[in-house]
Image 1 (cartoon, rainbow, N blue to C red):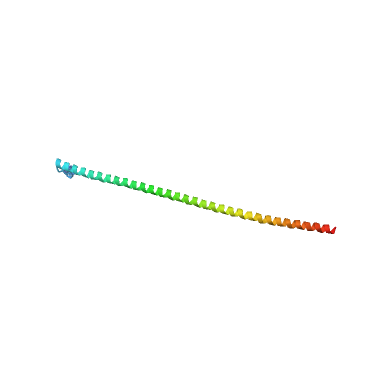
Image 2: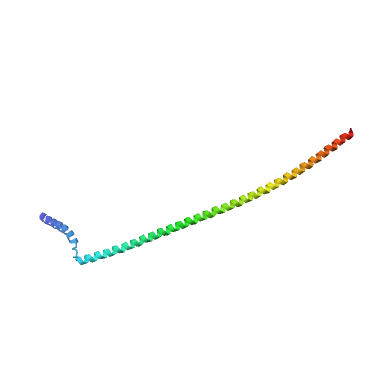
Length: 144
């Protein structure tokens, strides 16, 4: 019985090692022509991929150029707006300066007229005061 178990175990071990050998398939023979055709297809696919890559590179270059152009246009537009703003501010400052000069001229005229009026009033008061002093002197002389 022991031999029988040993033989059965031996058979199982041999069959167990032999099963992976049955799992391997024998590859069909490939001819040189089939290999050359497959390589030609691979080369054609590689050329197609290279062409697509070149197209993508061209599109990226166009996109970069377009983006640069847009940035340059935006920069130029911004600089033009800043220049226009500066010119407008300078014009406003000149207008404000002219108005200030006009106000200063008007103020000088008003001060001149005020000085003349006050000078006239002071001269008139002095004349009246002198007249009163003469009248006072005559009255004193008459009393004496």
